[in-house]
Image 1 (cartoon, rainbow, N blue to C red):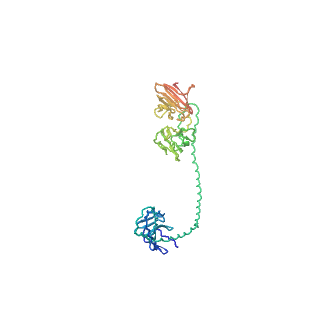
Image 2: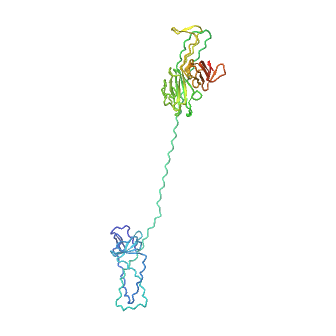
Image 3: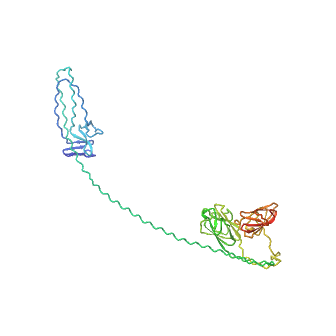
Length: 461
């Protein structure tokens, strides 16, 4: 017998046939359209006359539920029955293997089970009069139930063959690493210009009478000088190639060409050439200099064609740190020294109405009124009322043999101070150190070594 297998998710009026049975989906359940009528139950027997027994117990309810209503019961379980009160069709909640639905089992519903017959009343009751009433006819038996549903057909066995997995693609190869580019060759260093030769000193004339004044020696051709400035490791110091120590004092000559190389200056200490400490005005005769912002790490040379009216001193200084300062002395160019003229005595004329005795002329007066001696004080006298300091060679590089005369113009004593690292020795004594020049006193200082001077005069203690 073929197993019934009702369609899943049926639509309204969809039909299903199994063997000689057919059903139609009415929206709630599969309604039988060709059910076979069951057997008619036998006629019940006539009850015997006698005492009326007490009502029998109502039979216990079977495991399956039974519902009589016009709508399908909710949450049914397999085997539950529902008698539609509108159509009097009986349906069962059926699982056919792949779905669970309401299915009508026959045209007429099953006959319910007969309840137990009540027990006979106890004896001793009064005997009623003979009944003339015929016992009621038993109810007609229900239509016999439809035969059991055939077994569900077997499900085909699952295939055990698994489709093969495709092989994994190979990993793409990594491209070879490009070679490292070669480093260009290092350019050769530029050559340093040769240093101009030092002019020779003329021979000394023989001693004898004072001769006439010799003509001035000719002025040598303009020379040039290169100074390489350094800032070692970005430290708080400047050095110069060819010089020892920090902040060496440099010397330039009026009329000459001077170059400054600032490649070794770092960005932390840009270097500027200035007329004085903190002065950001332009330095006359200087090209490629920036007195305000300075220069550093540049291959462009600072060029200084020293003017003939240049000041006696300029400075090189860090634009960020004013204490990082060095000095550049400016001097006149000295020509060759002419040979001494023949000695004679007498006087000479200036070509006018003035005549002068042969020998040294007057000692000019300097503009310095106090403080450090400066290069322009050489071979001059200072007429001052305040103290004067003899500076170290590192600050003002006087030539050995320099003579400066100091005259006190006031009635009060003034002090001649020896600078740091300088020895001022009083002639004819063992005294060194600062000296006191009395009011209206006069003295002279003579440089005999790098930082050694001799001093003598009237009113000096």
